Amino acid sequence: MKFKISYSLFLVMFLGITSSLFSQDPVENEQSFEERYAQNIKKSRINGVYIPANLEEALNELQELSSEEALLKFAKGDEALVVKRLHFGLGKWMIYNWNFYEGSRISHYIKELGISHPDDQASFLITCLHRKLNGKDLDIANQVNYFHDYRKKLLQEKLDGAVLIKEETKIREKNN
Image (cartoon, rainbow, N blue to C red; front, side, top):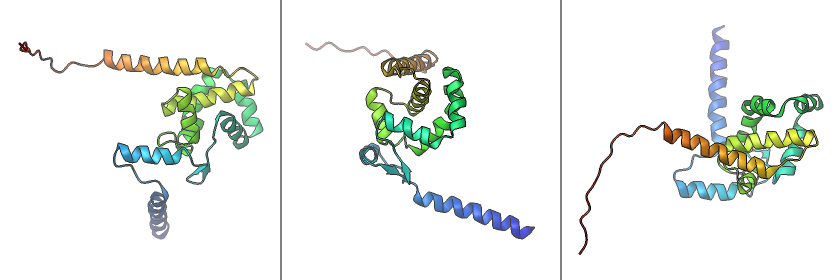
């Protein structure tokens, strides 16, 4: 029994260490981030995963990766509910595997549409897939406006809830 536990512990540690060897190094500053972003948005594969170049490719890739049964169940669900429920599964898969935080072809494509937050990009793709499967108009412009307004609202709520720590008033001398 002791052998199994120590072997399992060794295996877990080994996999953790070796997986970190193959991941990208963290960026040290904004310039490093921008350089990596510029490289990532040109790559067709990141960490061995195919990165779609545009919306059509992304939706096709999601359909190819999904079973027919799952797609039928997905298409039958209410759009808002489906997007909410799949965000922490499919959405997080896209954010991680399609490298939304550090940039990729598809995240850059969506960013150029006007949706820049990775969570919003994932929800956008889930919404588009649902609409495509149901033969509906993707209505990209209204989706972009929705996410823009949503982020603006979140920022305003954050500002409204902010606590003023200290306020100072300075008297400026007039120049002759």
